[in-house]
Length: 146
Image (cartoon, rainbow, N blue to C red; front, side, top):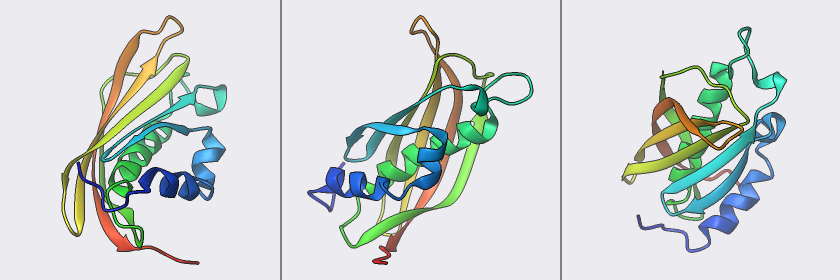
């Protein structure tokens, strides 16, 4: 993937300062490349639903974040991205020590970026279980300078 912003990682790190909900749930980006982003979340009781599995909203948020920032890594410095469409397929119940999100752009356009994500639970022993797959359309917008 080719980025329109040579300082995309610095731009994203700056943008992360205002990602209040992301910080609220404890999610952090661990890898940022053009068109590809990874992040992780240490699972706590607050992330669980009534059966002690990872809440579907947490799973969807992780997918949305990694896809959104994967798309954001490709746009010019005066642009941003917002989620236009989001689909999550829940494949297995999520439990373990950590949730990992891996998002990538599968097609970048001038106005729309098509993305996909895998959301994985990591067990205490390091075993990965794919719990969800997400697809999103990210819309390129002029960046808000405020």
